[in-house]
Length: 234
Ligand code: CA
Image (cartoon, rainbow, N blue to C red; front, top):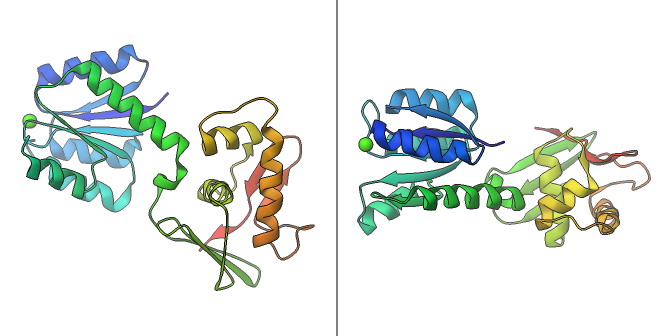
């Protein structure tokens, strides 16, 4: 179950949010000032943060700016600052969503679920950093912003599905994904009987990125389980 960190100095509101999220089965952690919130954001590795802006210790804006330097966690701002400028500012410094006070707790829960869903089905959003891998003499560079991939400094062209598979595997280098998991993460569902389509995507992908498709270096088969990425990140 997802870990959610709620940073809010108004205890009444904090308790309401906590109760609603717990009812949905989330693991909820709370902080009542900015410093404590930042510490938890760094150490807890939450899946999502609900963030008030007007906080003692450290403002929500400062906190978010610091969090964004080290993490791409989903952040929903919950604030009494409701002007359009303030909303846009919040989104510009890296919030994923913005909800104004007073708010409906049920709407907040729905937005939390939407953020977590979006993150799960769209690995493209999970990072903005360029990923570089090397293996023996070769290098593989993946740019998630531009959807570009370079093999030994030369651009190669992947279909959106191939790109998603490569990004997902490489972001969790070494972790094994079953065909069902890959399908679910790539297209948001996993229909029985479609799992073999993953194999054809992998086959095409290998033809584009591997030196020798019989002895792949980047995309490795884990027999009876699925696939994993074998490159080491630079
Ligand atoms: Ca406040």
